[in-house]
Image 1 (cartoon, rainbow, N blue to C red):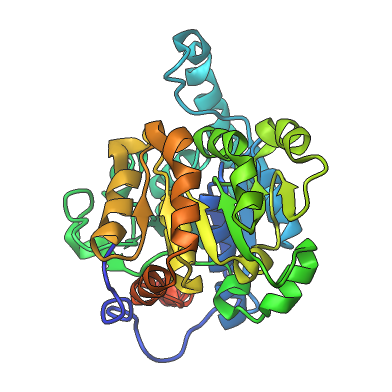
Image 2: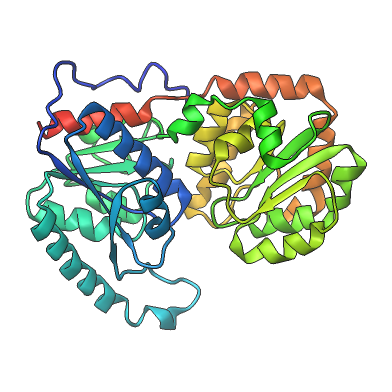
Length: 382
């Protein structure tokens, strides 16, 4: 992650943008880290060129099939899954699912007749972009991480443009196709109009006590959940309140653990994240690309617990980048249960350190990546 304020506007053509009659497919999902940037790009396209028709394509059974319609867009589902590394037997039918997904994509393309396609990562990105490339339809990739996935590397060779969150991505994509934009962030978070008082009222919390927000990702984070579970009493003992996003698998256990405790809000998924960020004094988070993009914008002191099984261990690399700038604290996944909550308590007591972290993380914020990407796409197909 780099300070890109002077980079993100490079390569954005000036002049009139023609969007009339354009139809764009946005493919991908699986996690909030793919879905929310995709919706942000869609919203930016619609704001610049309201006549543009947008269709999402996702994977059946994944969270995009719920979250995209909630954002006001139509979505078509593919019967596709990724390679299962933990159970090889489950991969027996994978080739058939891939073939079926290409057949489903061909039907979608025949009906919708897209002018361009955008891939944001996730199972559905590959068949959609690959099919578009075989038909000569402009294809665009957004790579949110500092280490590109294998599918995106393959697709990047024939992509019209590749939008990256960071510099130095030439090892993965042709240099001539790369546009460094940063990562798109939900507009509700960029705008940040929620006051702390409104946010505290929203969660039923006390204005006289600090608030810790734990967001282990849209699907939850086991090590973070177990750390909070183990030391839940330390929050109350140190006058701290907690907003705890658990993910669905841990929700019931968390609810039982905090039963009868004041100053704790528990949910499997927080839709109104602008309220959660506004309420928070300290944040606990994984260090995926999208989480970092949001945290830089909201300027909160953060303790990262990187997911150790991410490709090329890029979450650890992401976190270290911020730690080196004194913009974050990092606790390794295997030490989280023992060290995380005590580190939160220590940070809550150190106002000077929190202030330095807030100032340093704010320098990395990029607010208009969605607009830069939207302009690039619309100008490329006008």
